[in-house]
Each structure stands twice: as C-alpha cells, then as structure tokens.
Amino acid sequence: MQFESKSLEILAEALKEMESGFTELPEVSLEFDYEAMQRVLLETAEKLKDNYPYFHPYYAGQMLKPPHPIARLAYMLSLWINPNNHAIDGGRASSQMEKEAVADIAGMFGWDKFLGHICSGGTMANLEALWISGKLNSEKMIVASELAHYTHSRISEVLKLSFQSVPCNERAQIDLNALEKVLKTGRVGTVVATIGSTGTGSIDPLPEILQLREQYDFRLHADAAYGGYFILVDNLSPAARLTFDSLGQAESIVVDPHKHGLQPYGCGCVLFKDPGVGSYYKHDSPYTYFSSKELHLGEISLECSRPGAAAVALWATQKLLPMEKRGEFAAGLAKSRQAALELYQRLNSDSRFLLVVEPELDIVTWAPRAKTTSRISELSRAIFESAAKRNLHLATFNYPSRLVRKTWKEVQFDTDSVVCLRSCLMKPEHLDWLDRIWELLDKATNEVLL
Image (cartoon, rainbow, N blue to C red; front, side):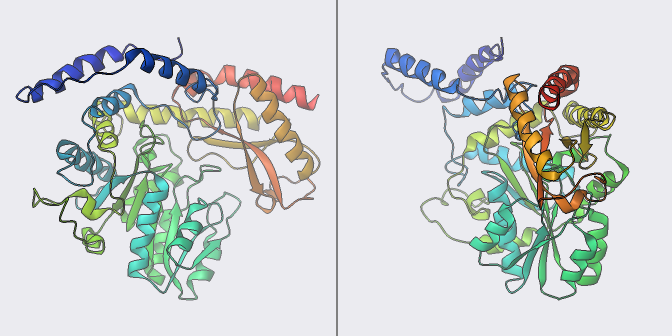
C-alpha cells in the first residue's frame, strides 16, 4: 500500500471530540447525495492518478515533500469549522494556534520579540518582506544573487522598486566582490541573502555579508524559504553552520513550512525582527475587527482571508515534532542532508559524471561527462528521460557555463549555459533508498552513454 490510511481512524475520533464542544447548539439536519458524492470523488481519484509519485523516494525532482500524517489530519479536522485567520472573529482558536506556531519558528533563530505570520507561500512571504524594505528605503535598490529565486526580481517590479542581480561565484553563492562593487554606489537599500537556492541548494555567506552591512548600512533579508529549517541539523559544513548561526542578525526571514516543515501547500512564513514594522500594515476594517482588542492577524498581513486550517496543521505538527536540535524533526532533516552527501560522493568517484558544487543542504547537481557543454546538455536531457522510464524522477537545471569553467577543465564551452541533472533528496527515506536510486541512475546513464 502506497498511501498511509490508518490515521483516518484517528480523524474520526478527533472529529467526535471537536463536535462535543458545540452540543449546546440545536442540531442542524443536513442532507447530501452521498451516492453522487462517491461517484464524483472516485472520478476525482481517477484523475489524480495522472501524477508523478511525489510521495515516493523514487521522486527526487521538484521540491515536493509529503505532509506528515498529523498535518493532513489536523488540516482536515479544521475544515469542519473552516476558520479564516484574517480576524479573531473568523478564527478564534486557529489565530492563537498560528501565533504559537510562528513563535516556535521564530525561536529557531533566537527571536522572542518579532512580528510574523503565516501566508500562502514563499512568494507572498518575500513580497511582504520586500514591501517593508521598500517602505523603509523607497529610493534604493533590492539586490540578490543571479541564482536567487526569480520571484525577487518580479516582486521588485510589482512593488515598483529597482532590482539588480549580482553574479555568483563558483560555489553558486553571491560573489562578495561583485556585491561590494554594487554597494559602493550607495544605491542599495536591501540585500537578499539566499539560504538554500532552488537550483543547487547553495547558501550565501552570511557572516561576510554582515561584515559588509557594517560598512555600507543596508537592510538584510534572508530568503530561507527552502533552507531555514536546516538551522536545527548537526551535519552541516562548518561554513554553513556559521551562516545559519548568523541568521538571527537579519532584519527579516522567510521560511516555507510547506517545504521542509512537513505541511501541505500552501504554508509560508514571514518574520520581522523589529515588531515596529507592523505600523506599515496599519488599516481599519470595522466589519471584521470588532470583538477583540487583541491584535488580529489580518492587521499585520497583506493577505486578507487566510486559511486557519494551515495554522492548525502547522501547530499540530510542531506539537508532535518540536522545532529543536537533536529532536525527531531535526533528525529527519539530517538524514536528507546525509543522503545528499552520499550521492555526491558516489557521483564524484564515478568517471561518467561531472560535479557542479558540493551540496550544502540536500540538493545535488551533476552532469554526464562529455567534450562540449552542448553535448552535456543533450546527454542530461536523455538521462532525465531514461531515468523517468524507470520511475526515477529527477529534475534538470540550466546552469551558467562560466561558473564551472575552472572545474570542468577538459570541457569545451560552446554554450553560455549547460543543462545539468538535479536531485532534491527532501525525504528522510531517500537515505535508506539510496542504493536503489543509484541502481536506477546507473542503468539510465548506461543506456544513454553506452
């Protein structure tokens, strides 16, 4: 059986418990056509078969990690109430659960005083962070590395803020010399540090960026949508450890619970170190903010209606798996990181492959060896398709050729970019399945190269 279903028994019990809290109300009799519902739901299940097996260890392509069963159950349980965390009036219990859950996330970075909330995902979270940056530095630029998420430039355009991309070094990190050159212009208001790029999982060197901040006085935003939770693990490289230990010095941080936080889509989180930035959100909504003088979450977020179910699921997950070092949650992340290190070592010792960068988190990028970058791109696509036929699902990544010129010494660079293979080993199970994954990759590679 591929899909865990035993937990549904717990849901039925929890639903009865929740219902017992409303026994003072007169019963409402609702009639539904259950036969029609069954027919449509089975048709829906049939449609959903047309998917890649995102839940399975053989899927190592996009950043898709199955939610924990407790998250699924808590999310479904709350839907019988269907709270809206815009106002306390629409989500009384779930608003409090959101505040507690977000405080746990902020606690990972050593923040006990902060402003933060859940939002639909990393895009909205980064938009809010850059919106505040624009309010504070309206005439100055946003800068991020060329391998930062593409939404930063798009968000800046939406916010009517200037944006500039900064080149990366051979480690796929923001180039500090190039960054300082831009900073010397005096036109930079905010530097975005990427803590886990979506392409390679690389993290920008935060200690060095903080040193530049002392000299050039800019606002630092950490886009840790992908990598933020890795602050809890104990098997990072020394350089990565220093960066994660410095995260608390950023002015704002974005983390996506729907990536490594075991949550269903969509669940992002934005945090501000200074609670005072909440004044920029100030507005009035007399028909929603009326029953409580306590802060309503809609008063500190750009989104209005927001699913209380996402907060309930996150709260329940963190109650079961606390955000603490050496805990069960952290151990799962450490296994993903270990899987990436072991895959990297196997690739590095195999003459058929070229490596891009050593993994900082749990993403590995590599390419088949060939004489030219155009041929490498052709072979990468072919291996990707061959692996998919064997139910091993990888991803491809278009990487700037100049960033591997020094390491791919025997390659002729006849294209500006090169298509590489990429695996995202997000699931702890990937470590246990690595032998089988390697066997399929080996067969797929031999089919293409031999």
